[in-house]
Image (cartoon, rainbow, N blue to C red):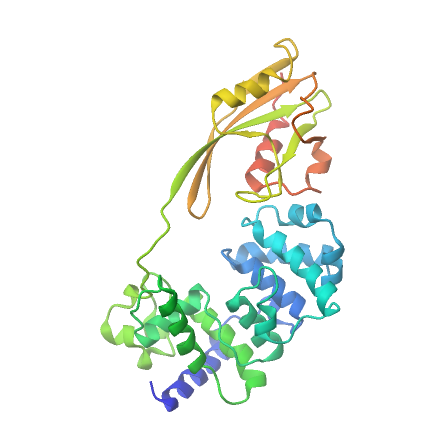
Length: 356
C-alpha cells in the first residue's frame, strides 16, 4: 500500500467517523484519562449497552483516580459484580494505587509508560494515549484487528507472535500524519466503530464501508476468512458443588476464593470438586437435628473458555461452622458491599424466599 493510499485510508476513517460513527457515548465527551481508561477496561469483552450503567455507577462512587485508589478492594469488586472478568477490577484497583504512588495521581501521557501499568496492555495504552493526548500510536483490539486484516488482506496466522508484531507495524504505518490533535482520537474511534457496526465477524456490510475501494478482502470476495488464527483455546467443563450455609439470622457463610483462578479473591460460598468432599463439609456443620438440607436447581455458568456446572445445596443450620474453614457470616444487607460473582449473588438472592 503506497504512502498516498495510507493517507487516504486515515482520512476516510476520520471523515466517516465524524458523520457515521458513535459520538454520543459518555466517555467520548471527555479527554480525562481516568474516564477514558475506565471505559476502555470495562469495554474489554463486554458490550457497550452493558457497560453504560456500570460506568455511571462507578464514576458516582469513585469520581477520580484518588477515590478509586483509596477504596477497599471489596468495594471495587462489589461494584464490578456482574461485569465478569474480575481480574480487570483487581488490576483497575492496583493501577489506580500505582498511579497515585508513582505518578503523583496523574496519568502518564505516553502509551509506552501507560502499558507498564497493571491491566493496561498495548492496545488499551494506545487508545488512552490517542484519545486523551493525541499521541500517534496504533491500537489493535479485536474489532480493529478484523478491520485491518481485511483491509490489507493480511492472511498470516495471528497465533504466531511474529505475525502479530507484523500487523502492529502495518497498523502503525496507517496512522494519520496531519492534524494529529483532532485526527488521532477520531481515527482511533473510527476503526473501533467500523469493526463494531460494519466490518462484523459475519456478513459484513461492505457496501456501506468507506474503505471498500481499498479493501483487499472485499476484492477477493471473502472477507469472513480474515483474521486468520489457527490456534484456538478449547472449551472445557467443570462441575462445582456449592454449599450455601444459612444460619437462623438468614446470614450466609462466605469465604474468599484463592488469589488466582476463577473469581480470584472474591467472596463465595464454599466450593467442592465432588460430592464426597461436599458431604464431609456438611457433616462438620452439626448433627442432622441441627441442619436441614435442600438440593437446589443446578445450572450452568458460561465463561469465555469454560462451562461451570454449578450444583447448589442449601443448608439451614443452628450449629457453628468449623473454625478451620476461613470465612465469615454476612447478611443480605452486606452482600452489595463485597465482591460476589454475579451467579453467586443471584443464587443467594433466590434463597431468601426458600423457607422450611
